[in-house]
Image (cartoon, rainbow, N blue to C red; front, side, top):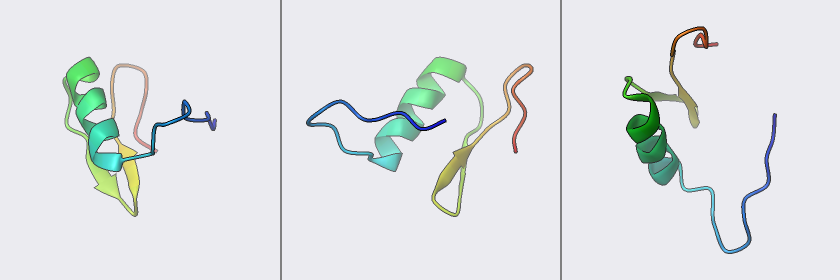
Length: 45
């Protein structure tokens, strides 16, 4: 799914990765400009 960013926010991959790491406490990897991780029933695709 695609979600628009709030006005004034830019899609900074490093900021997004930090937020995901704080929320999910799992290893997050960047492949071809996309962040990937597995968590519970959410599997890396």
